[in-house]
Length: 322
Ligand code: TXA
Ligand code: MG
Image (cartoon, rainbow, N blue to C red; front, side):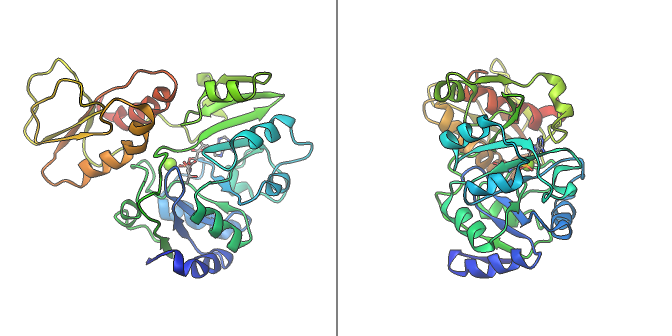
């Protein structure tokens, strides 16, 4: 794996054209990209991540015309309405796929997920590559999503290039909102920084809902356990007085009571949900990397608006320790 900067972006784009793998920054989390139209290149993503092939990939584009190539005609009008309001940005649209999309990208399903990142380096890379780029988050399957190139580097995956961005990478900090558009209805399959309320506000006439449990069948990647650090992670019991030695505690506001622990990280000073989302994975990586921390306790947030998306990630990250 060669770590490069934006100055050498042409090398990375050529690598993608030639069927190689490139990790790159986006405004949500780092992605691990390959030419989405080349099944052999896409297969390398699953191998590098040790990801089961039942978990479909998001295809990344650099201009909205590409929606019409990847989605089957006729495209539902809601797709264009969502695109007008939220693309480029942290929104992924799932819609019936066109014939050019290989089955491996969609895990054999009829639908494909498409996103147009707003991060300038991601946009430039996809444009230079000249093809749509299939990219999951650039972490081994089940582990924490990367919000810095260092988080990608420590995974030691078999990839060709790691395109390092800068301090303003992954400002959003959690993965995109995934919305299925079908029969003139938007169904949120994975909550993100763009919430149900945001979509309703932007498109008051649209039918929008959050997926019921049975939608997991339509989106098999949505497992109960996911996004986990390599150390035990528990929800913080705020009434607890003592913790085992070498505990790390993640809190979301400095106004709250404090706890006795070796290490405390605050994701926000004031409990601001956008700030919490932005530092969520970064703080978990910090705890994972700290050799003085053996187990991590993280505070819950209220499940409302962006709080739903934060708790979605945390419940999966804690799942095996509940
Ligand atoms: O922000 C993001 O979305 C990041 C960056 C890199 O763009 N990508 C990302 O990819 O989070 P990944 O692979 O970690 O998560 C993609 C999820 C899948 O697990 C699945 O739940 C859903 O998106 N998905 C992908 N294709 C789908 C499809 N055809 N139908 C339903 N859900 C799909
Ligand atoms: Mg992921």
